Image (cartoon, rainbow, N blue to C red; front, side, top):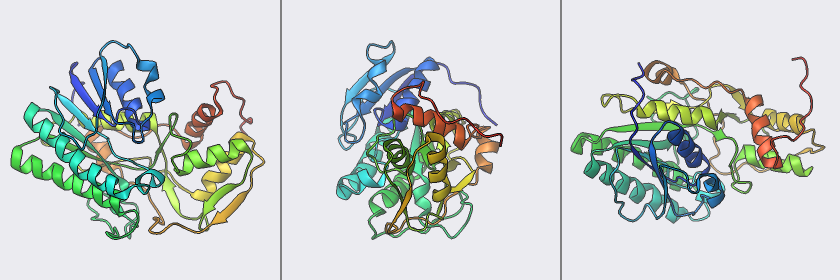
Length: 327
């Protein structure tokens, strides 16, 4: 059961200039909280927070989560970590140290402040899963020596730290396993499939599909995901998770590409490229726990979310999209 809305409090969002972090800051400010966003701009972008410059109750701190954190907060959302293969594989050692040291520092701050901490984990902890859909009880199938391990295993050790700080220090933690999320403010060069396809379609160039395109993903619109994080933060101390946050509607990568082409009216054609190492064959969240414990489920369809995201990448909320068919 979801608890009552939290009264205004002091909130820290690490990774606050990122795609997801900036949307979370917007939601928290709208809910009346005093928000501090922390980011070192490794993958976050100043423009994601430009609209909040001078906003009441908002503070930005440029800092690296690998360094000890300070301040007094009631609630911490720990999101800081490169989250797309292009970014996290560019410097895998940095990614692994951010994942470990950043989470350690955030937890130590939560312990010292008596703050609640929401940890942004990931569906990547399931690796290339043998269970489908993936439930929170599934321990995963991750390659600890592969090129994705810096992120996958980094998030797994982050979860370990969260639960050890809960057991040893009594820190109130909530672990949210985030599945593929998309929407406005994604970087056009971050290598994630939705932004890749939209940018390629809007340019009219070929759309690159890795492998045969039959591998599946479940895509959650950013507003839905932020609502899930907020819902997790409202749960009593007895609830720590982990809890899956994602949209259980499953699509193949080829279906996604074809939908983007249709919505943009693009002349783009699909081209194939080799499948990256350890790329999961299928990914879909089981969200029964999120429904029952958080009272949360996504509401934005892939088509509606893609239309909003396409308008963002096209640079105008008024960009014309092809008319929908009757179906």
